[in-house]
Amino acid sequence: MSNLPQVDAAELGARIAQALEHMCFIISDPVNSAELPETDTHSTVSVGDEHPLWDLSVSASNGLLTEIACGLMGIEPSEMNEDEVLPATVQELANIFSGIMIEMIGGEEHPYHPGIPELTSEAPRTSDAVAVVALDAMGDGLLVTLNARD
Image (cartoon, rainbow, N blue to C red; front, side, top):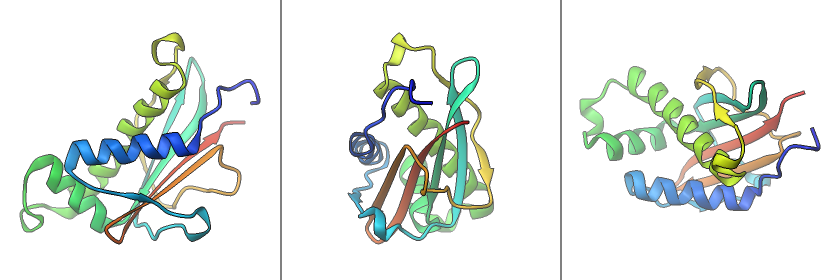
């Protein structure tokens, strides 16, 4: 898959942090990849052209997902059904972050598009990832990985 466009993890992380700040007033800082954050809820979306080329995975702590959902919807945590809202929130993040990645690698110049985000039971694998973004948002963790498809 060496012919795939390169994705700069630092730039992807900066754009994700900016999106979180603009969307829901969440301030986040990069975390050393050796100290990956604890996460609870996970989603993966494929990105590609006529065939999936990458899997972009998002994994976040439930505390962060609660803050994001509150920031996006303007509701209090006590007013939400976490079993419904948190999975939907991590899937929405996967959708948004895949759009950021597509824009980074060429936007309209390349025919890339995201698939439908799916919940997964495990955190994304980082060992062979093309890019790893780990963020800390006031003690809560967010992990985004990009893995090339075989």
